[in-house]
Image (cartoon, rainbow, N blue to C red; front, side, top):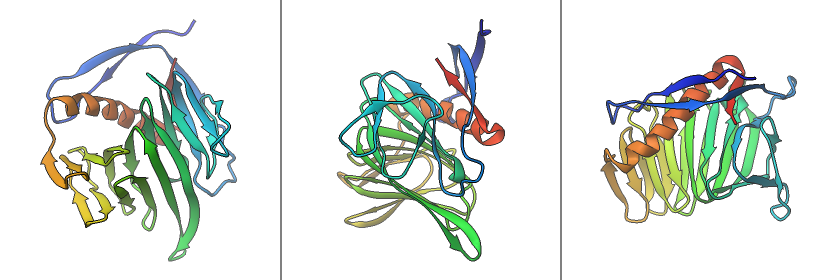
Length: 238
């Protein structure tokens, strides 16, 4: 019998209060080839009905420790979600319910004699939370949606973001790296603590209401990302 433990989730600086949740945990070591030098998209948790496809047509379920490759399509059902860790770039992504993405590019190149990675995720529907930790200089993590492209460039620091398929972008105020949005009207830098709607081109500070609830989830994802980066293993909830 696995022991039950209490995990306290801390809320972001938008609110002074904290929440506590009870979870039963299982630890899964990563099953990734040690010799691989390309980005690895590894499943670290699955909650509810989540599926993937190699051809975009035939879908099948997946479990924790599954490794996705370039070209795979991933989708989550109603009241479902999955967390994915991009091992070579230290980035963790949570696909919320009703989300579909395609891993369009996961490539390695040399820049100034140093290996760097380029990763492009196409967000077709739904919403994702992302925690990006200290990308290597020359490395990029990019999310494409209906409003354009959102890019995080390497060079140190950490970013926490919420991005929707229809063009809403949030940069958590605890981020040290802004989010660069490239759309039809040009480049918009979404600084920490700001929300940008590509539909109407408005930049607004985060409201301490609905966004707080969302950022609690991204704070939980940040905690998971810290465990993943530090230990090479994760705690997966049943």
